[in-house]
Image (cartoon, rainbow, N blue to C red; front, side, top):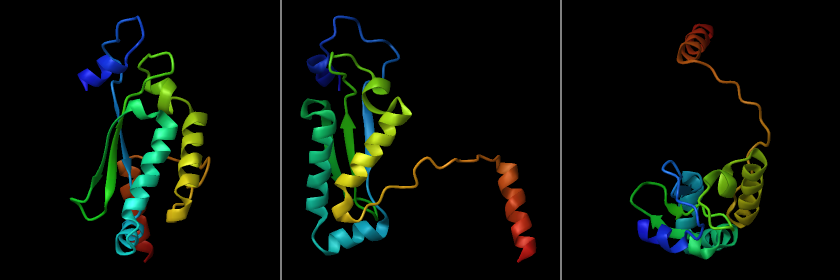
Length: 147
């Protein structure tokens, strides 16, 4: 990683000590979808489409590694990307996912690219309500009493 950063980093300023030097992306689908791709011989096509999408999204020099893993029940890809901005600065926030609109756009473009493989965009702008562990178990206990 140090060598790739040294090659890619073109900004005149020193890299911040707390800079995000790389981002590890996990790419997969549901177990059923991925198993279907394996049975139909589409896994290589799925991986190739993913790779081309990420080259378009992040540019080839910023993709450090793109590896298919078959060591678990569900096939998946790990992609390591340098968060290098067009001016040569390392900034994961500006380059990848720092703003809600950028993240939303990434999700939409990725879902569109993966449509041939059955991937659908999740529910957009869903309001999430968090609860504590105690609240969760209280709801579970109450639900069990109703059954």
